[in-house]
Every structure is written in structure tokens, then in C-alpha cells.
Length: 282
Ligand SMILES: NC(=O)c1ccc[n+]([C@@H]2O[C@H](COP(=O)([O-])OP(=O)(O)OC[C@H]3O[C@@H](n4cnc5c(N)ncnc54)[C@H](O)[C@@H]3O)[C@@H](O)[C@H]2O)c1
Image (cartoon, rainbow, N blue to C red; front, side, top):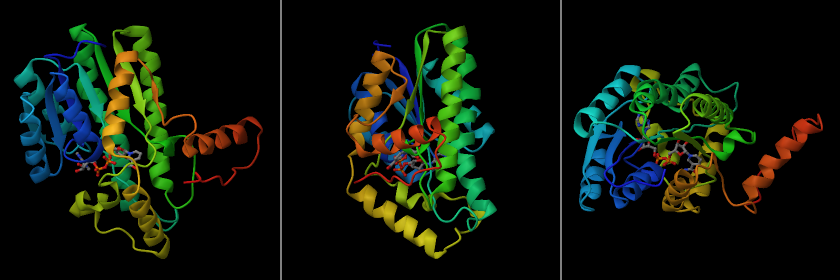
């Protein structure tokens, strides 16, 4: 897809971090932008920012973990702009700890946002994109956590592996049935965003996180690591280039330490070797 002017992009998790930079970059291309997020005040601020670029933008308060909410997002986008050409299923949350200590609610929360969020997005938007018949592109945000496994963030790895697998299947299916719709999977390394404070958006009915020693260690590590990492604009630029070039895997550069960690896991599998602990040397 190379024509962006007057086309419409929907971005979930658009009030912060990578999603906000995607929304800004799409607006800079002359696109109409639909920003979806669960945080109303930040969403309002994000829409105001986008409007200063002269772009048409709306904010839609959305819980990506709810099928009804994501269907309402599609309806809001379609009634304002007619059709949607770019969908970024980007909203995501993180929590960490030992896999046996994290609560059922911890699992429920991450699965709801990181997996169901993408599932609901695909079910609400893809049939319309197919029916439109025009060039479209879908970007699902996974993570380099989908390409490796590290301790103390097992739920996050699990949901991001699932996001990558579903997106690969989507790629195969659309290549066979509607090749005018491109598909990419964004797999960022560490990025300086609000991900370490994901719990700000944890639904009240799921209670608080289980604060174990390993949870604290994991959250401290992600707070420190993301604070000293890439600006999210870099990821937005990678996404735009991938949409233009129809590239599926949106990865860090080949010399990035996360690529070595991912390669180590692939070698383990190929050699039927037990999982190597190979954290990125960052
Ligand atoms: N920051 C990193 O290091 C990193 C690395 C790899 C992948 N990612 C992924 O990038 C994506 C964007 O995260 P980010 O790093 O920009 O974090 P962020 O916290 O800055 O942004 C995430 C946004 O998602 C929103 N959100 C949370 N729950 C939601 C829900 N139920 N419905 C709708 N919106 C919801 C939040 O309000 C927030 O605005 C996530 O999928 C994340 O897993 C981040």
C-alpha cells in the first residue's frame, strides 16, 4: 500500500507509546485517524495533538478485550469516515512474575488485552476490508517476546507468541483469498513507553496484581530497561515502511541483541536442544 492520503487508519492503544506515534505518523501522511484507547483523558489529549497536524481524527473509548466495544469501534470509524484501510491492533499490557505465582486474574488480563484484543479487531474489521475490495493493511503488535522465551514474564511471552502465530495464519489466509490486504506483525525490542505502568488500566474486577518478589523484580527490570530504550517514533517509522513494502516481520535490525536471543531459540528447536537461557546482551 503506497497511497495514504484521505485513507483511514484505526489504531488501538493510541493514547500512549507506540500507538500514539503510529497515529501521528499516519496523520502526517494525510490519513484520517481513529484513535482507540481505554484511557479517556490521554485519548482526548492524543486526538487534540493529531488535530494540530490538520488531520481528521476521532477518539473512541474502547476496551479491546470486549467484542461489543471493538464492534462499536468499527461502527464509529465507518460512520465517520466510510471505510478503513489500515488497522493496527496495537493495545497491549505487561505483568511479570513466576508462572505458578501469577494469579488466574493476571492470566485473564493479559490474554484479554493481548490476545482477545487482536481477535476482536480482526473479526470486526477484516470482513469489511474484504468486502471493500480496495488495498488495505493490518498490523498486529506482538513483540520480540514472541521470538524467544525468558523467565519471569511467562504470561506476556505466551500472549505474544499467540499474537504472532495468529498473524502468520492471517497472512496465509488473506494471501489466498484477498491478497490486496497486506499483513504485518510488529515485533519491537524494548521501547520507551508506558508499558511498565500497564496496571493503570487493569480492570477493577480483576483485582490487584500478586506482588511477589519475582513480580517486583520483573517490574523493576522492565521499568529500567524501557526507560533507557528506543523512542516509539522509530517503531512507527518501521511500521509505515513495512506497509509500503508489504513486509510481514517488522523486526529490530539484524545486529540487535534481541535477534541473537531469537536465533538461539530457533537453534534450540532445530537441534532438539533444551531451552538455552540467552537474554539479550543490552
Ligand atoms: N514498550 C515496549 O518495550 C514494547 C516491546 C514490545 C512490544 N510492545 C507492545 O507494543 C504495544 C503498545 O504498547 P506500548 O509499549 O506503547 O505501551 P503503552 O502503555 O505506552 O501503550 C499501550 C496503550 O494501550 C492502552 N490499553 C491498555 N489496555 C487497553 C484495553 N483493554 N483496551 C484499549 N486500550 C488499552 C493503554 O491505555 C495505552 O494507551 C503493546 O502491544 C505492547 O505489548 C511494547
